[in-house]
Amino acid sequence: MAFPRLYAAVAVVLLIGSLSIVGVLAITGPDRDFTFKTATGKLLQFQCRNQCRASAGHLQRHINEKANTDVYYLQGPGNTLLVIDVD
Image (cartoon, rainbow, N blue to C red; front, side, top):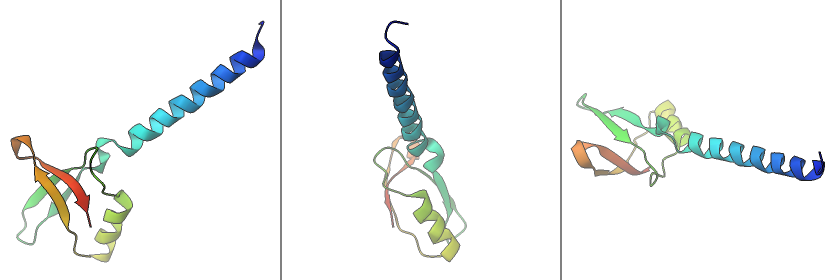
Protein backbone atom coordinates (compact mmCIF):
# COMPACT_ATOMS: atom_id res chain seq x y z
CA MET A 1 0.00 0.00 0.00
CA ALA A 2 1.59 3.17 -1.17
CA PHE A 3 -0.97 5.62 0.16
CA PRO A 4 -2.50 4.33 3.43
CA ARG A 5 -3.71 7.76 4.54
CA LEU A 6 -5.40 8.36 1.21
CA TYR A 7 -7.15 4.98 1.39
CA ALA A 8 -8.23 5.69 4.96
CA ALA A 9 -9.62 9.11 3.98
CA VAL A 10 -11.55 7.61 1.05
CA ALA A 11 -12.96 4.89 3.33
CA VAL A 12 -14.11 7.48 5.89
CA VAL A 13 -15.77 9.62 3.19
CA LEU A 14 -17.55 6.57 1.75
CA LEU A 15 -18.71 5.48 5.21
CA ILE A 16 -20.07 8.92 6.10
CA GLY A 17 -21.73 9.24 2.68
CA SER A 18 -23.42 5.86 2.87
CA LEU A 19 -24.67 6.50 6.43
CA SER A 20 -26.03 9.88 5.33
CA ILE A 21 -27.93 8.34 2.43
CA VAL A 22 -29.40 5.65 4.67
CA GLY A 23 -30.47 8.30 7.18
CA VAL A 24 -32.15 10.47 4.56
CA LEU A 25 -33.98 7.51 3.05
CA ALA A 26 -35.17 6.43 6.48
CA ILE A 27 -36.58 9.88 7.25
CA THR A 28 -38.33 10.45 3.90
CA GLY A 29 -39.57 6.92 3.38
CA PRO A 30 -43.16 5.75 2.93
CA ASP A 31 -43.46 4.89 6.62
CA ARG A 32 -44.72 8.43 7.22
CA ASP A 33 -48.03 7.54 5.55
CA PHE A 34 -50.92 7.34 7.99
CA THR A 35 -54.63 6.52 8.25
CA PHE A 36 -57.21 8.47 10.22
CA LYS A 37 -60.70 7.42 11.19
CA THR A 38 -63.28 10.19 10.89
CA ALA A 39 -66.08 10.82 13.38
CA THR A 40 -68.44 8.96 11.01
CA GLY A 41 -66.16 5.90 11.00
CA LYS A 42 -64.72 6.39 7.51
CA LEU A 43 -61.01 5.55 7.09
CA LEU A 44 -58.91 8.11 5.21
CA GLN A 45 -55.46 7.04 4.04
CA PHE A 46 -52.98 9.89 3.66
CA GLN A 47 -49.69 9.74 1.79
CA CYS A 48 -46.87 11.85 3.20
CA ARG A 49 -44.37 12.52 0.41
CA ASN A 50 -41.42 14.91 -0.03
CA GLN A 51 -43.42 18.14 0.38
CA CYS A 52 -45.03 16.83 3.58
CA ARG A 53 -44.08 18.65 6.77
CA ALA A 54 -45.72 16.13 9.10
CA SER A 55 -43.71 14.78 11.98
CA ALA A 56 -44.31 11.24 13.21
CA GLY A 57 -43.68 12.40 16.79
CA HIS A 58 -46.18 15.23 16.42
CA LEU A 59 -48.84 12.86 15.07
CA GLN A 60 -48.19 10.36 17.87
CA ARG A 61 -48.58 13.10 20.48
CA HIS A 62 -51.95 14.07 18.96
CA ILE A 63 -53.04 10.43 19.10
CA ASN A 64 -51.88 9.97 22.71
CA GLU A 65 -53.60 13.17 23.83
CA LYS A 66 -56.71 12.47 21.71
CA ALA A 67 -56.28 15.98 20.30
CA ASN A 68 -58.05 17.35 17.24
CA THR A 69 -55.77 17.08 14.23
CA ASP A 70 -55.96 19.22 11.11
CA VAL A 71 -54.54 17.65 7.95
CA TYR A 72 -53.86 19.91 4.98
CA TYR A 73 -53.76 17.87 1.80
CA LEU A 74 -54.31 17.84 -1.95
CA GLN A 75 -56.29 15.24 -3.80
CA GLY A 76 -53.86 13.47 -6.11
CA PRO A 77 -54.25 11.05 -8.97
CA GLY A 78 -56.45 8.05 -8.27
CA ASN A 79 -58.14 9.90 -5.36
CA THR A 80 -54.99 9.65 -3.23
CA LEU A 81 -54.73 12.17 -0.41
CA LEU A 82 -51.30 13.86 -0.55
CA VAL A 83 -50.40 15.54 2.74
CA ILE A 84 -48.90 19.02 2.79
CA ASP A 85 -48.94 19.69 6.54
CA VAL A 86 -50.44 18.36 9.77
CA ASP A 87 -51.30 20.47 12.80
